Length: 470
Image (cartoon, rainbow, N blue to C red):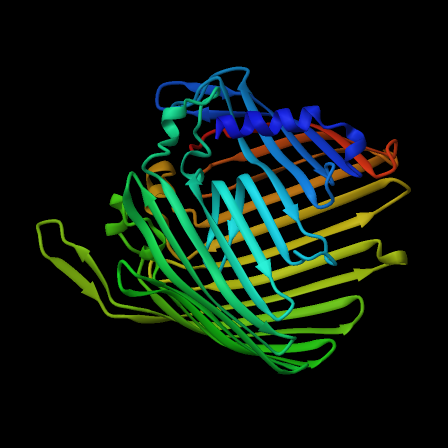
């Protein structure tokens, strides 16, 4: 991967900017501070982040693009455990080619480098490798990818990178999807993924997805994944959607999930599993006025039998049980030019080990010229205390509260200042708070005959967490 990055960088640096008819660059700086109370003393952390994003299209050849996203981090004060003072990584670094729509290879897309790929209902990978996608004029849709999975060490990689940590010889992933679509009436596909860690199979799955549109108001859909290792379903979903009017739709369906199959089979944690559940659900959306929309969801989840090991051997099992969930949401826009927006949500989720009731209210407004405001209040009430929280806070608090408020001011069309923060109380944190100031700068120019976009933002912030622990 390192050699590939060097090659791509040399290619990008030697390409004249006049080659690219569309060039965009953005950078952002973020300084954040927080305090972590410990058993013996308190540590103060001030990490400094720099993020860089780059995209250049039509690099000498129409359809050839360079895409990059990188980040770096330096701790200016105390360094957290298991981290180094300097850290960083590459999210995306690739060359992409998309054939012209009227050319002989129309419908073809190729990518090489570090990238995120998807194919099928449950395949989403970050890898160093290649990707090819072809969609024929006759409805055939083929996707294939392969390479080294990189997400396994994405968050904890030191900088400069130690090549041995990648373990290219033992970690690899391949997969793809074959599908067919007939106009706007029918679409279906079958997908496959095989992923290995240290030369041992972690995932081997088959997936399917299908949708039928008998008419403009009716959709029938289904998708799911089957684990070839465990020889059982990982997840499945199916349902029917009715678009009764332009402003009214209803959906009814079924979901099934086996949570333990989302854990790699090479992980020791795969022996621990949340209980599987099945759910029948109804969803609706209604917009009686242009400025108002209402949505509602209701579902009944059946959780299967659960068994736990007893303290002195053996196990105890509980029968399956039915839990209900529901959600109501309203969004409204009003005032001159829809300057004001208010959203409200009420949700209830039940679960065998403890559910919750949630209420959330938020709003935004464009005030006097260039000034805007955003407010958000989020409340959770837990049915039962989390076991971890019981060790952190002595009281029986089940309420979680978080409030946030921000003010923004457009100094110029391309220069914006924002300030604000959030504070709250949760069962895990007696108090928590964050303050942030961000300056964003966008520049648009056209020196080479195509749009060039450069953006710059700086975001210093400070978080204070007294009396709590993460």
